[in-house]
Image (cartoon, rainbow, N blue to C red; front, side, top):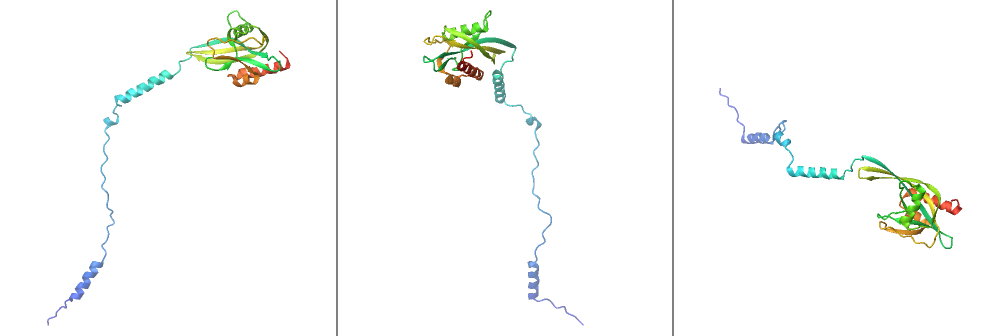
Length: 219
């Protein structure tokens, strides 16, 4: 007996192909890796290449400028004793007080003062300096007000200045002050204006003491 195997029809074949085509492909779990370029090796010779000549010259110039701007080291301390006076006068009607100030070469208003010469007392220096710097010769030293301290540099020297200050009255109200060549000005001020324009705070404090003494007549 001969058995025959039935063959699938064409429609069945098409169904099988369609099923196979409809199946989704299985994705690989291995991700695509990006290709990376190998890092370039650092050339040690280039890493320590000296700077260009222009850069070296620029740094040298900056160093020279820094050295020039640097203040010289203080090699000596110098003490300078000086003396001066707060000079005042009464107005013609004797109702107001005026104070004499001089203006130095840097436009700073201050009082007449100067160095104490060898053999001079501080009081004698005050009289002499007022005569030289203000041209006032008819004056009277009434009392000592106090002393103030300044310090400044003179190249490689530190100068410590001590100024003795006296209360001085101008006896001749008509006497006109005359300034020296190095001054920018000389002027009588009202007491309040003098306090407002005076350059140095320590002198201002002594001016307030002077004003109180004059008002109270306690010379």
